Length: 531
Ligand code: KIV
Ligand code: ZN
Image (cartoon, rainbow, N blue to C red; front, side, top):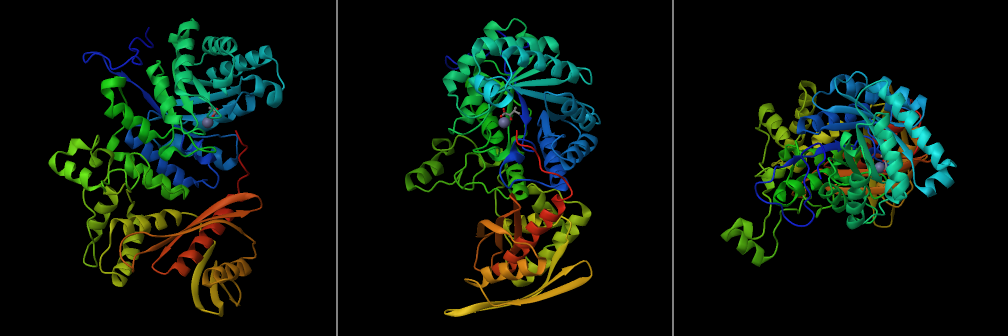
């Protein structure tokens, strides 16, 4: 059986060498489902930067956001549609006129625009969430797809919680959605409950039973609650899916979505088995992972497949010996294939702007003239403090520049901190807001960092609940940059802040101010509804 005339089944083992490879569309939802990770919200500048990188790396469809969710979401989808070229730009909508009209208003500027309409179909969602009968669901789905199709010809329909929907009803909905104009039908495992065998069976079942299935691309969208999102996505591909929905670093609602870098490299490395290809330039995977990690504040675990720091580190003597004799003994991919640079080149105070720009580019950051100037100034200050500047330091400086893209309402002027064993810590802090400077001295807290928290809160007049606080060294040596990643809660919402300095108290103050500036920034837009 074939989908779009070029599908073949591979689940029973490797396919013959001469079998044609099938193009799988990569639908990236980092900016929509990915942004639903707690504390991962990105501002407009950051979203544009991520979207541009996704387009440059060859992503077929970028789900840029959920335009009805907030004015901020609408604006970012619109600006991405206006400026990012090379990928289809998609906006999400619930199955109602207002959502669909708003999604179209945001994506209509893109040369290739898609509206993604979703409506839950499982019995649990029908009964408890929507309180609708199957026939009502069917009618609503058809009406929604038709309305979206009146605006553009690229329409995706998702029966939410499809993997827990009765087979018969799912077939009816899918068939009706395609008849109404859906060109892609996405089968989400919304709660991450399915197993690879079940996914394979469900996709095969749809291909066997839905008469018009060849008129649409079948898509998979898997959540990682049981750690099966990537395996499930690949099972769907083996059963004929032509599109994978995924996110950079696998970020997303709860345990996240299928990781883009993992599905892409699985299909590339095991093309003998899957007989599939994507348009993704795999050398951009590590830079994309770094950019998303920096802009969301969600760190990548060291042993994360493909992009983790240890993904290509061989520790055991036996492995190292094997590697020296023949790389393929223990390595199935080359680090440079996914974008790890070959060397950790050291820069110093004599390095110029061009060397810095080149290094930043190799690390995945293309800086504008103004950004380069600012990073270069910070680089020179750092080079005076420490002799050797490593990749980690440069990433931290660039990230500081990126997070600096939040309007700087509050900035640091100066601080003096005193602390010692059995001494109550004290901080004298001066912050600026516009042209005004404000100072406070506090003598309280469990240490200099806690005291700095108190002092910032006192000046700014906000009470923040610290949910997560991490300090890490950005590179080598005791004079390395210390990066503070912070998650705070304010009025029931989570915000993150990042600060970098060779002094960890300063990093903490900068991270707090970064979070506070984000809170102020976001107050202009309302909260996104949960999906
Ligand atoms: O997980 C899900 O069901 C979704 C839909 C909106 C596609 O994210
Ligand atoms: Zn999802």
